[in-house]
Image (cartoon, one colour):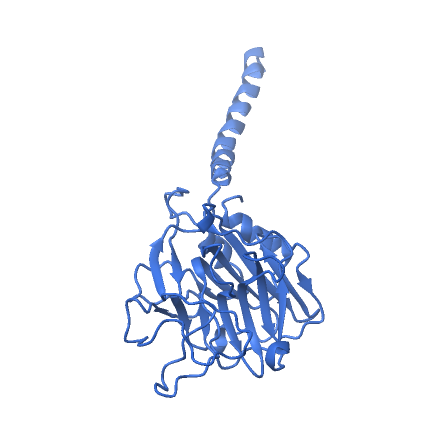
Amino acid sequence: MSASLIVLIPVILLGIVGLFCFVGCILPAYEADLPYTQYTGKTVLLNSAIIAYWPLGEAKDTDPAAELISGNTGSYIDSTTTPSLYPWPAFVIPDPPGPDVQSADAPGAIAFAQPGLVIGDAVQPANDPAIITPCVVVNGGYVDVPFNVKFIPPKSFTIEAWVRAGWAPDAPLAHRFVLDSRDFNPCTGFGLLAKPDENQSGVYHWAGVVGNGGSGGEGFTTVTSDGPAVVLSSTGTPASTYLALTYDDLTQTLTLYVNGEEGGTKLTSVVYMPNSTQPLWIGAGAPYVPRRPQEPDVVGSPLFPFVGALQDVAIYSEALKSDVISKHFKNGNGLE
């Protein structure tokens, strides 16, 4: 073999290796460098335990609130645009259930197609963080999803949502439900909410609640975040928050995660009884309020209205592990 050929062989091999690296290394590296994950398609819908998912990206209240797993669509209830559904003030209920109910008045409004909360759900194929899927902003308006056993996990579960709290710091102290699927006496079902701090006026903490089959106040078990207080966007800080509540039936453990962190918010020896009759409400609470006798086909006005932005409400039929919860938070923020 000539000396010149010996010299050329390494050069040719290096070129071949470089070609393979270009085809097989550069393109995947480019994909990996994209921080926006299309949260809906690649994080939520690919989870084998998903049983219900409402993105809440509709453009107007005449569109149903689409549910992408089994078609459990909801109706947007906006008393400012559909007064025939609400011929009374939006959140005024005669004789609310119990003297200690902390609710607040609200106009019953919903704003549609608002700037989204989930940065990792950039519109494809642009993958531009400035163009992300929209959300709704509620102020007493809410989503009514009729009861369906398909989205009611009988044992272990996870419920999650992306939110932005928007009530004023000096607003009346009240529970603010992100979602509520509970019944009362016996107490069943689950919910996610912000609740006032008992010791600090104007301070709220995120919480999760499940019905344990009992009655009255003792019929619900509540786990409350011991981490940072709820940040109100009305103060000028547009903070998005990822919430997840898990229940593990085998260990009877109820865990609340805020922005992917458990933060010690866990209870053990918790009994959970599934709701078997009441609808799911997103953006308000107390679907168990009795129907009005003068209008038996209409559910009474809801309590505990949320004020702020809501997006990507999901239900899973298992208690997602902490590393999966952390991944959802990171994917939703375009961090992985």
